[in-house]
Structures are given as C-alpha cells and as structure tokens.
Image (cartoon, rainbow, N blue to C red):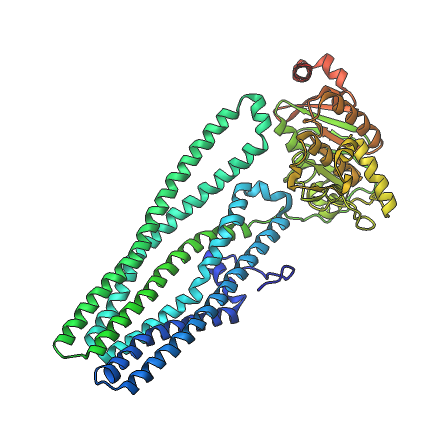
Length: 591
C-alpha cells in the first residue's frame, strides 16, 4: 500500500476511465492477486455442486459408503480451502481499495497545493470538499471489479463448461440467459450515471453554501440577511434531496434486478432440469448439480451488476477528479528581475499607485473592488499592473512572492500550537508560515532562534495579540484547532496579522486587517502598524476612520476606479462620497 511520503505518481487525467485504469496499473501485482483469488474462489464455489452430485450418484444412490465418505471429505476440504481463499481475496481487495483511496487523496492534495491561491478562483471550496469526502471513497470502491469482477467472468465460463457435460440444452439456456440479464440492467446504469453526476454537482454547490454561511454568519446576522441565506440554503437542500430520491430510485431498481432476475432465472433452469430428470435424460445427482451451478451463478451475476453499479458511480467521481487535475495555476512566464530598490506599484485598471515606504489605504464603496486591486498588485490575477515600471507578469514569480505578501483577513489557520500557527523557527530565512498567507519568504526574516523570538514578540505586540497568548493555558505552546476555532473572530484576525508581520515582507498588502476588532483595539493596532512598518510599503483595504487617520495616502475607489486621492482629512473635506462612507462607519462604531 502507498506510503504516506511516497510519490503517488503522475495520474492519467485524459478521462475518468483512464484515471481508474491508472489506479489499477499503480498496483498491478496486487490487482492480479485479487483477480486470482477471486477467480479461484468462485470456481471452487462452482465445484461444490459437482462434488455433491458425485457424492449422490457414486455414494448415496448405490449405497457405497466409501465413495460417499471420499466425496464428502473432498467437499469439506474444498469448502475449508475456499474459506481461506475468501479471506485472502477480501484482504487483497481491501488493500487495493485503500491504495486507490490514499493515492487519490495524495494526488488531489498535491494538485491543491500546486494551484495555491488560484484554486478558489477556478473551483469552489464545496467542490473540493465533495471530492475529498465522497468521491475518493467511491472511486476506490469501484476497483472491486478487478477482483470479484474478474472472478465472476471466470466462474461463468467454468460453469458453462460443466453444464455442457450435463445437458447441452441447459448450457445453451444459461449461456444465453445470463447476458440477457446483464443487458437488461445496462440501460439503468447509464441513467444512474446521469442522475449521480447531477447529484454530485448539487452536493458541491450545497457544501460551498454551508461554508459561506458558517464563515459569514456573524456578518449576515448583523445585516439582517441570515434568514435570506437560510431560505436559499433550504431550497438548495430540497433540490438535493429530490435529486437524491432520483438516484435512489434508479439504484433500487439496479439492485433489485441484480438479485431478482438471477433468482427468477434459477427457477426457470431448475424447472427445465427437473423435467429432464423426470424423463430420465439426467440423473438425480446431475439435477442437484444443475441447481447448484445455477445457484452459484447468482453470485457472479450479482457481482457483475454490483461492479457495473460501482464502476458507473466511480466514473462519475473520477471525471470530477480529472476535471480538478486539469486545472492549471497561473502561468509563470516572467523572466525579468524585480526592482533592485523599493519601487512603486501601479495598477492601470484602477489608477491606484502605491508609493514605496508609505502606508496606503484603499477605500471602496464595494469592498470587492479594493480586494481586486490587491489581487492584481500581488499578481494573483492577470493584469497590466507594474512594479518599478516593469509589468508584474514579466517579473519572475519567485521574486514577487519573496518580496510581496498578500495577507487575507480569512486566510487559513492550520491546526497545531499557536507558535506553529503564527510561524515556528525553521532556520535562517524560514521562520514564516508556509501556506496560509499569499506570498512566501522574506530576506528580512530572522536568522536565528533568538532573533526569531524577538521578531515574534514584536509581531504579537504590533497586532495587539499579546493578551491572546497570556490568556491561553500554555501560551504559545497551546494546541489550536484548525482555523483557530477556539478563538474569537477578532483574536483570529490579530493572529493572522501577527503571522503576516512576522515574515517582514518588503511590501505588505492587507485585506481588512482590523474589521473584527473593537474601536480601542483597532486604534492600537493602527498606531503600532504604522510604527512597525515605517519606511516599508504597506497597503490596507479598510473603511475604518481609526485606521485611515494613520495612513499617508488614501485612494477612494468608485466602481473600481480611483475617484480621489489624498490624506484622510483632505478627502473628508473635499469628497462627499468618501465622507458619507467613512461617516457611516463612524456612526456604527459609536452605536
């Protein structure tokens, strides 16, 4: 089975079927062993009626106790050996499924890491969660076909040969009847794929809505929009339930026919064999063997139907994984070096110019407009933004990530100790947290443990997060839940800010760094941020007058364009729209 640190290989993402086959080829010997165990196991199941018929014809009917004991002993031996084979088959197929499960998880996680910040711009969080929670399990389950599925085919052929030796007529009926049963179920499997695909799509949408609702519950409650979103969630839930009923209806027919048709077929063949026995064309032992052969065939036919059902669902899920694997991160075509000295950032689309060494604020009627500017200046979306006169897209991406950091107010917080969450010391230049913030290393990072601890304490002080550490039972060594759910919204925001400050980037672009803080804490953070980042380029998106009053330059955006620029007090005096926007925040703060 694949090791946790083993390379999962390069997946074949040309299609769902090709991806499933790739999972098989990554463990060929194990799959071959599963097919062998499954085949021998089912063939020996078919041998049981033959041994029983010999015991009846050679021992019981003529009264030969020696022959009866011999064939009975053979029946017991074959049964015991087959029980061991069944155990080995199950163990082997479990390993096959687990390998496929873990391999798919590693492939999906690796792709998510490769996409980085571009992931959520190409696929919703709900879709990714659905792949990780449900699709991976379904894909691994579909590989059952390589074990019992192959065994069912072999057993079918062996039983057909054995039936020819009993009665060519019965053999013909069985050879023609079983494929007819499979063909009757086939159209339902095609319909199941369509229903399952739509169900999975709706499931992804609903999962994304759950995440949005949970993440913005406090904001929604404050705006009075909680009921509106709850109604939308209820409607989506009802649609998903109705689609689930459709999937369940098709599934029930598939499973019912998979069991019912073979049983009906067993009755027909048994009736035909009984008539032949009554006419003296076959012996009583052969009649028993025919019944046993057909009864054994019920298993393979059920396996075929079950495998068809699992493969149908597996293809649906594999196509979703393949679609995810086909996504590409933002291309890195830059070859120029970044400016050798602090330089201005400029976004032609909005008209925002960020001068080096200054604290700049972006104020927008629609917060998404300010976030879009930050994304362009941080090179997370294609644009004509420039840095020192050179287009960002022409500059090597690793140099941009080294010197420009985008700090989202909802960036991920990974489980671990609080120190790990903010930024553990990992040696020179590696003190920063790896993935949660957008942007990477900084050449200004502390070089040793002492300097790192000093920088950490300074970052906590600047973010006014010292009281958080003091209130925790083990301070920085206190275990934290994923996304720091054991902290309040304001505490999480300060931890995120401290983590961004610890990397000491040349250019820091922050999105609403104080939106969840009370007025006193917000003013403290604004004062300390200005002092800590003195002489380095810092951009904040905000509409808080407490923060704006500490900035050097404010750009007021209307419909994504700069409508006015200046200091906070200049814009209050000269720009009515800006004054109305900021004054509303002031009134809310007072309330």
